[in-house]
Image 1 (tube, rainbow, N blue to C red):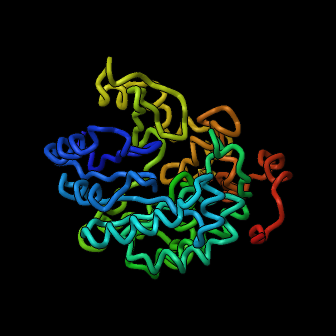
Image 2 (tube, rainbow, N blue to C red; image 1 turned 90 degrees about the vertical axis):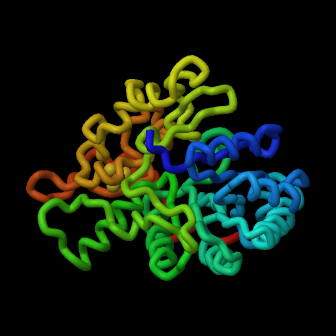
Length: 335
Ligand code: SF4
């Protein structure tokens, strides 16, 4: 399929006794390989050495707060912070490219600036910022309003423009619309407004490490999640199975499943996303639409953009309900 990257995630991928074999096999097929181990006592320096030896290109660690108590409470795991910092040191000592994954939600967002300062000092090549999708344990966390998302986008964009490491925003594709609007304001485009911002397609991180995709990746569009039982989902946050790789080829599921096909069709989107001139580069979070609205093709409730009509006038009426429940304009305050 020309797939450039496979990620062994979890749970904790270290629980797979064949993780090293999987990495070696993936490298033989010329994939780039990353993994996201949990910060536990199983993640030792010798395991990191073995991961590197098997050919792992990049290791990601989850870090949501810049200090121990809040991070451990958020993760529900005592000593998660200190174990993460230990793994950061070992990754550097073993020469393994390091990525940090951070969840943004109502609880973590007030600490974004402090988190940025902290992450800058960790020597990473890649910072992946996940906007919460309220499924599973995440359903218990506080969300973000569309206005809060826009404020965070401005801060993230400033980091992206100033840092050497790659910054990737996940489950907030309207960040691409935000950046496109900014770039269009600086240099008005000729013709169509909805082209993918060049700054969001940086193909390599520092030292030829993993970069960004050449186009907007969304659930089922440039991405497939295969569970430990073989079920194929459009994303790890969109629990609608399109088949099982034990009985069907992953490529067939990706290419032929009606669910995946709909998710790749910007004209199948509904509501504001279906009318939006940015739907080909954004399309909204399909996972969040499913989690909050129950329809993977519905408008993303965390985007407040008002698509223009054919004359270029904003169309307001269909988002009144969503706007009415949005909190005030400031980011939630740190407690
Ligand atoms: S309305 Fe939908 S497609 Fe348009 S910017 Fe917002 S999330 Fe993206």
